[in-house]
Amino acid sequence: MLKVILFANTDWFLYNFRLQTAKGLRDAGYDVLLVSPDGAYVPRLKAAGFAWREFPISRRGMNPVVEFWTILRFYWLLRQEKPNFLNNYTIKCVIYGSFAAQLADIPHVVNTITGLGFVFSNPAKGGLLRWLVKQLYRLALQRTNTIFINQDDMALFLKNRMVPQDHCVIIESCGVDIVKFSPAKESTDIPLVLFAGRLLIDKGIQEFVEAARIIKDKGMAARFVLVGQLDRGNPASISEDQLVQWQQQGLVEYWGWQEDMVKIYHQAHIVCLPAYREG
Image (cartoon, rainbow, N blue to C red; front, side, top):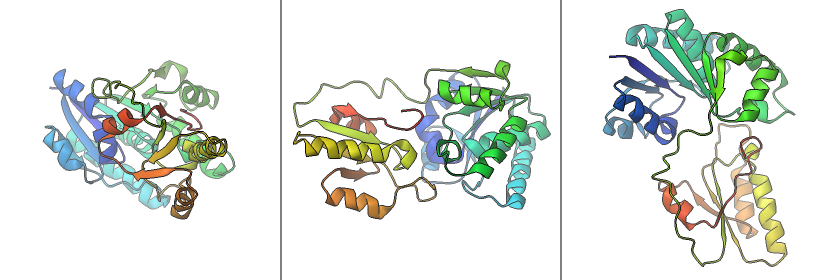
């Protein structure tokens, strides 16, 4: 039986965005192993019938020794597991996973670029880091296949020669169960405008709040709701004080992190996606 490893920087990512992919691979006859740091979603991955292996990885760490050690640790994992296919998600997993796979001589490596992250989304910051990441991508993606979700992202990678044109492809969407996330009958309540996502500047949260301010200044009846978490490990995260201020000004309601997003979406009249790139 052919083995596939899906590698991401959080168990949350695997559960929420790649569970259907994992199920599809399993149904097609593949032996699927999920690899990520430990977290609250690991029991759910196991309950879904999947093998999971812990692999600690720092999202923001920049110590060269630690980062090089991370690549070696993943190389040893690959040598032990001997997968036929490796699918990497998120920036460090893509770069480090590709390097480790080359060392371990993994036959097939697929990298999925679901977004660019803070390094590329904020032109005013991260100049040296952005240059370094570009060089690492160029080295990592030369011998792999790369899937893009966003046409603009693929264009940026091609323009900066980070990926060979004959090694990349774009698909229209992935990770969403369209049976589970199906349309509901629209309610007749006061219009509810929903922002769902991490509370990051590059997700367009400031623009969302400013739109709420404009609508409310015009005296129009509408509710603006934020659903998601502060990402304190991300330089683009808004502060907790800013979030509290917006609520005190009556601009938005903050519902925090929600488990049942289908229920949340069914309450919304408008879903607003003002992210700087995928929006």
